[in-house]
Image (cartoon, rainbow, N blue to C red):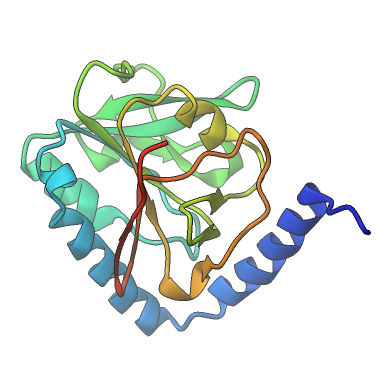
Length: 195
């Protein structure tokens, strides 16, 4: 019986679905992104959250600009991650999207001097990017482990954003992979029991 190489399998899925995501027509992407953001903004976990931890989308990732605009207009604290040494990331609180600058991997990051988000001090949700999710809530990102390390200590609600065609039956997972509490697609919300 052939033993599954998890890293190899994950890389195969990454390559395949990054290409598929690249081929989603831009008009369809805009429509799907808008539906996903509207669904997130209607969640009670969003409405009652004090802090929203967001991500700056890479090309072809779900655009979260509607979320940041809504959150800031409602007086919520908004934080974005900044990559630091040791493949770790730290979230900084912003008051304007203009406080995001080009950082590691060409991803927009908060200015280093902005206040740091202190985990567990409030009612927070973390919005997660991914290439794909599976039907149990596990995510497959880019393989650097930034989110896995952060989420292992995160006390709030983890919400994944993904297109419905990028939710697989199952993805290979290792012992450090964590699942989301729910994922949102353009077709609806899928909720999972807390770990």
